[in-house]
Length: 319
Image (cartoon, rainbow, N blue to C red; front, side, top):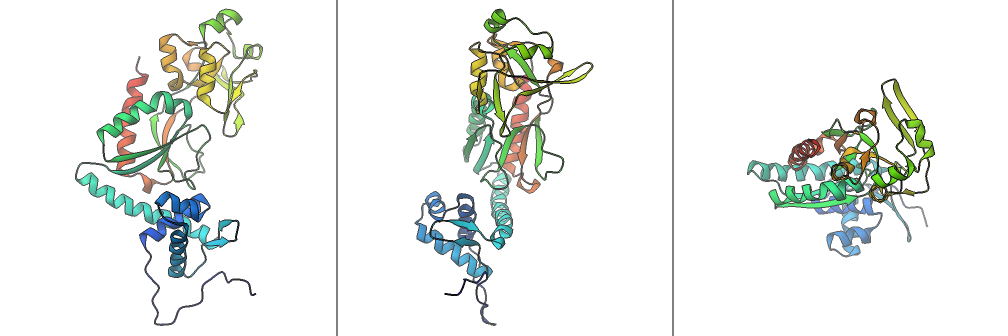
């Protein structure tokens, strides 16, 4: 049997291409994200056969193969890879148009898909997002919590709440929420009573330091901004977790020193569960941003959320 052509047969001269349907475009994007027609169909409440037919109809409209299919796998073709970003943009443009109409009526609506770090998300953001959704009851919130940095280009997300600014060569758009936030070295009073209070960063090598996974590697090189310059200390300890909230809980329980964003531990510091070890200015900068894949994705809902979170962060950090 001859190999399947990358392109569909040419249409007749007078045969127009079938119009592209919104539902077909949405199913293509979801199938690309999920790597499966079955999963894309499940998310939209359809059968796999209907989802497959929708993508085939889109392929006929475009005259190309969007996927390379086999009995066991599904992956994007080269043309599919090229078309995916445009499909996302088209869907987002339609959603933005609908949201703009809602904004003209003084309300925001639709689905808002966010990612957030584990500790900040669970202990700080959750009640804030509850209040935001209560103020905008037509908004549906999809929240992904975790410390692995979400891929805003490939994953079905509208924005991510992240520490640190995007790299200079990135096309990501960062909207500042808490630009002056820093890390803080702290421990429970019980730990300091047992092991002593370190006075300099190099003394941390003799202490139990609680570490977590950051950007797929253990965060064990701790930078401190001293009056004489930046000092980096490689720390160690018997406890490591891929969940930063677990590490904070270990610190509160008196198991060691932790170096985290001040926003993450501010309630613990105020309640006396943790004690700050070094002066505040020693901490490494850890600005908090709301990040989108492109400026065109700054929908009315995202802009409203940005302004809301800026106000909450400022109020929260005020002594």
